[in-house]
Image (cartoon, rainbow, N blue to C red; front, side, top):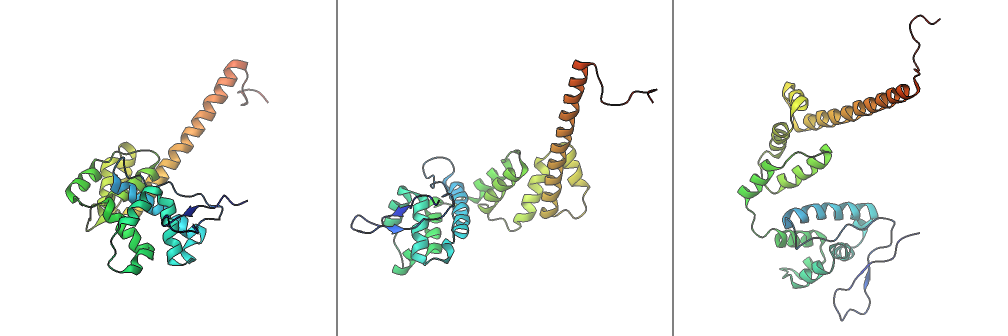
Length: 221
């Protein structure tokens, strides 16, 4: 069964709200405009809305319907902001790409590349690796790097420690793609080793408590 419809009313005088949702996909969270880094909030939210539009078939709808879906995902505050936007062309208000551009300008009115670069290089490592990588890509997008892949590669190498850093430094002609492959493989192998160790410890504990072993002892035929 599909979830309930979600509606966006473009104005109080609008008698019939626009139906924008009737599919088994979860709506993205509303755009957070009052806490945290609003520019980063917007980048993450926009990506989630783009995925939702593609998955739900929204990209096949008319542009004005796509705009309604975006506003519904954004929440009441975004609808209020939308109603205050000034458009050079009256048709732009029904263009989803133009709407994203307007919202991006609203959420990032003063792009400070120096500050964004500082935040990029200060980003601490966090598990799982893909979570760290997602945050890194989001911050890199705000830095206007001429070579973003190289910057992200270097940041990963500088941030990880121990054996993983050693493995990366051994690579010849290390690319961002290869860096990501090595980090994911290392993380996966660590999980597997941990699982094996925990299983072994569990078996040993059982053997000690029962005084028995599952392995043949020397001399038994």
